Image (cartoon, rainbow, N blue to C red; front, side):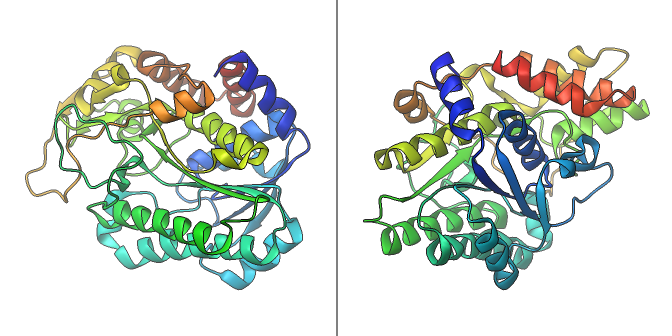
Amino acid sequence: MNAENLKAIKEFYSGKRVLVTGHTGFKGSWMCAVLCQLGADVYGYALEPSGDPKLYDILGTYQDVKSEIGDIRNLDKLKKYYESVTPEVVIHMAAQPIVRESYKDPVNTYSTNVMGTVNILECVRLFSEKVSLLNVTTDKVYENSERPDHAFCEDEKLDGYDPYSNSKSCSELVTHSYEKSFFKDNKNIQISTARAGNVIGGGDFAADRIIPDCVRATIKGESIAVRNPVSVRPYQHVLEPVFAYLLIAMRQAENPKFSGSYNVGPDPESCVTTGELADRFVNSWGEGASWKDLSETNAPHEAGFLQLDSSKLKRTFDWEPKWHISEAIDRTVSWYKAWNSGEDMREFTDDQIREWMG
């Protein structure tokens, strides 16, 4: 993030009414913490935070966010809340985000990720005279033939394989349909989608994610079990996409020509195998941390190779990642160590945000 973009973001979001769906989740909690630091008037609509521990509770974000607990699939409740807020910016992140969970419960995955998108767009259609909306999807929306060294561009075919990835492909198509059908000639309604690579950072406690698995095992004094050590993913610190989302939403609000779809991924050197990520985690944590290869022979299908081409984002907005893979892992490890030591994690998280913006 260059200084000009950062200055513009600080000025644009100060005092803005921003609605974040999925604000109680991992990425949503970081988004709210950033927006609060920027001085935005933050609203949230999401389910109760799940799991234990919960980043949303750890940060005490609920003290600063005008929060509504509700299901994104409940259109009537969402409409009432949306109309009462009349947001100027919407960051839509409410989702069922876990690949393995999508195999266990595909109906919930599709209903949340597809109809949830329909519902938020329907609110925009019914109640917004002027708004900038960003639908956050995933790098897994593309039809992936797993060609080595191929980085996906925004104009490639959408056809995710597993129910999670495919539901996000559908969410993209829903967004494009609403934009063309209802908002094409309305310069006051601007809509984009953002396809982000795998994010890491402090406070992710979800099941079936590599960094939370590393943290849980290491704190227990156990060796980390790595299921797919040869899978390649574009890893980035959570603050990278959070600020990219805010940049896209701001720029399209200022000029409709910036509406579209954007890949939000790290530079190629941050696209590493899960085994290499585990190595880097172990080296950063120290203190006897280790991992073991527990490759699964009958596991549900997950992409083996996935990399994004983010040149459109860089070219359009003069965007560059700030924390590359080593820095991202070091900041992530330091967050979990501070949490495990009982430090004030809201203050620690705010310090990391200020460091990133620094």
